[in-house]
Image 1 (cartoon, rainbow, N blue to C red):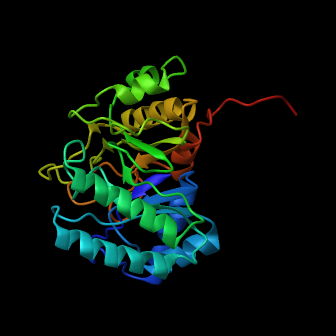
Image 2: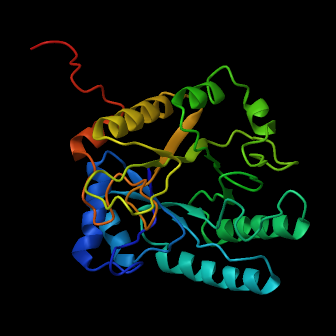
Length: 294
């Protein structure tokens, strides 16, 4: 998958046209992805229609509340229920995500009310839709969940390879503290065999020479040339594709968003590299190496 925040240069969270929504689905597929993780946005139903029609999987994620309070949770429960009711019949949706990175529930390791909120939303979602997996809190500090999502933006592919290699004991991995002091699973919620998915990684910023030199850009790492960008992306995807621990992955991100220049596309959806090159790297296809003869 690829992470997609669904922003547009001139219209922000509203797509400029139905054709633009269809084009986004087509671009995700053209870059070699079979799914998108819609990040902090409940997407336009027309996008979901085109994903249904053209064959693109979608993880639907609830935008996070600003801070924890009983009022915030009541509103979240109401709106999340409306989201599920509205989008339940779209076959493209395969996962529901009510919380991301402990946003709105920042004290999961120490505050029982925050844990209760995540567990309540997980069970409510499973009650409203028993057909799809639910990630209670994506990224870290997991408790009630059907998939263990990990966010890891280490820019060194060798570090990722060592961290999630076959020689790493799964329980040892989840007992470690991640960068920023986060743990992957909360106490009392050991790994119970759920699929492990690297749900955020990459984030390579690349502005290319066409961009204004004075524009401030941001990413988890940075490339300065087409070749450097391609090499970094290819090596990251090679490691992630070949890591047996992962049942899937979600690269950050689909298109540039404001100062975040870590998209595979510019914010106007112009590809930073040829689409076929991106697709080959996404699928870990060794370009130029042919098997057999004939």
